[in-house]
Image (cartoon, rainbow, N blue to C red):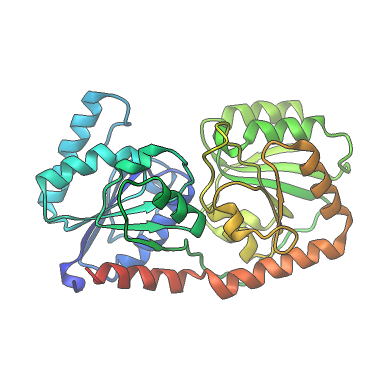
Length: 354
């Protein structure tokens, strides 16, 4: 399939902050210059209102949330019209919520090529019902999850998320040590856990702040926490990546999955922070372990374990050599392995192979 035959539609739940969303936008901005037509479907959000996407990308945001049969039927009809009107020949989806949509779309348009990217670690049999002509997984652990829960053998390719390798970051030094939680604020990201940990911990030095940068369902909860503790701070999302990390000393990824089966994929924020040489402390779940090697390029703790997290934080704050080692190895790994210019070329080659 050459450039003039590629007419691509990405299906996202929304265009708000999130790893799947950000990686899709990154790749779309590149592919928009390489293919004949590219479009993205998703309910409105951060990425639909900040002029982040390439002007050649057509955004379709007039969709309902996915919570009733009426909304489902309406969305199917809208997607079908978009496919027909724009002569789409490749549909690439990123969430299992689209499973029933994909079966109907394939029924209506049997010649469509369907691509699916597996972003998370689910450990359940819903994964059995995924349909695609080609499956992508963002890490080896995520690939195993996709293959394990399947009635049939799947053609699965590991396709890492990619990031731009940055230049030097303009770090602000103000005598404060900032721990940061960045991205989508929801239950699974461990927002309440980390705030409770911070409020209850009496051993952290006085110059430690907990900062949040992002948005999501728990934004109001964070705002209230800021009122109760002036060392907890909330900042609006940033569009420029370097601005996100210029006041960050340690990135916290305290994700919690209460069913003890599901887990994170490979959060984009981890890759970004590592590329700037910022140490990461994260829960040891899902695809995070494919990127963070404990005590080598980051630190891992058992999800929800406040004692382990406290020990790691205190050691990182007090041991300057450990901090420097983790920062150096994180930056080195990212600059030699997961560069956007490499991964996006692989994606274009992958698409053209059809």
